[in-house]
Image (cartoon, rainbow, N blue to C red):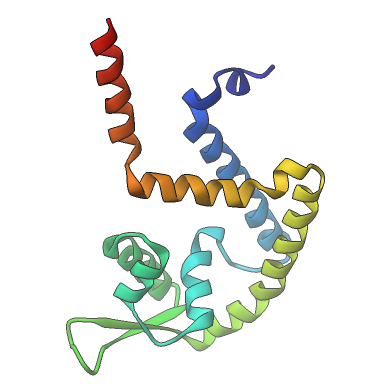
Length: 166
């Protein structure tokens, strides 16, 4: 048994991070091999923009369930690369609308077939074992549970219960 699997839930987050980093590196390898200057970390913003644009920056943050600051940093980076542009929202000048540039739209066209291939490859990967097909559902259930009660609260409750019995 490997070190990580022997520790069970104690390293659950570490195992998820390792797997995530592996997937991102492999996907980046595919982009590189195809000669496409795209980074997998850009995917969430590009995907949102592929569905709706222009879109307020705050709406991107809400959709991705990440901070306004994180999206702002990503958009700034993509703007410097000439892939997106921003404009003040006509209704509220404090809000920024985000949209793909011509260069960003061309890049989107290049990456979309890879996104389809990623889905196909992941379906093949998870078809190997019945439990693997349940992985996305299980992750969604864990995400819902931690929204109801954060992990830190759960850990502290167990600590309190453990200390009360000793």
